[in-house]
Length: 108
Image 1 (cartoon, rainbow, N blue to C red):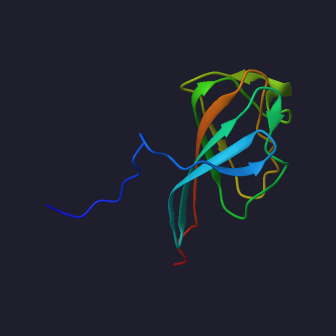
Image 2: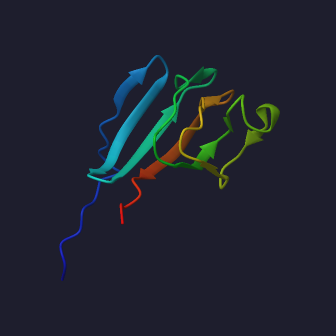
Image 3: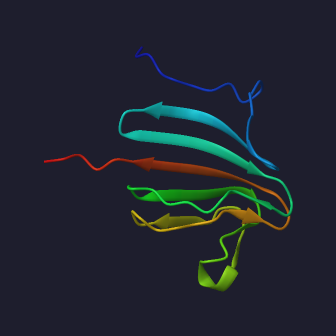
């Protein structure tokens, strides 16, 4: 059997990002990044942008980016794709957990 990388969900080590925002890095390798973010009710991740596309999958709760769809609420199962360079601001009125991933585009 091949070797696999995994994170034990029963013993996660959440790291503080900012007030009310925590993360677990699931995978961080050259060219790829996978992070779980947990946002407390009424809190948010600071506005930022990436040089590569950023993708968000809402695992639970309500996710809101004030700059997307006039602050529309996105529930569990929602997927958002931010093109490279897009400023975004992850917030949550109720609290949420999101899976965020991005990958650099191979140069060819």
